Image (cartoon, rainbow, N blue to C red; front, side):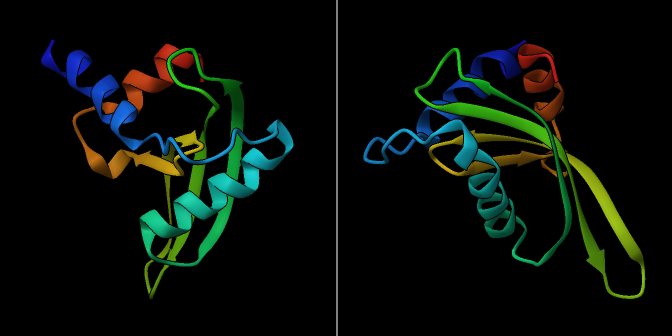
Length: 108
């Protein structure tokens, strides 16, 4: 139950108060930037499944799947949840079912 109290606090801390609110058409490019920075690698594919206005923060949230090529091991795909502006992304690898919490909350 503590996860539900901590997870919104993490997102609030990531919002960049100085960033102007983006247009919805700009969100996919900002999500790509957030994922590339988060993963520290070139992305093989990003599939944004949903973009929606945030109910908690100014701006948008996005969810979907991202794939990255791992040398000699093929492609690794995982789910993500991103906040724009703020360019912050949570991935399945972050554990604690954080992605599940936000996917459920925003109907991804």
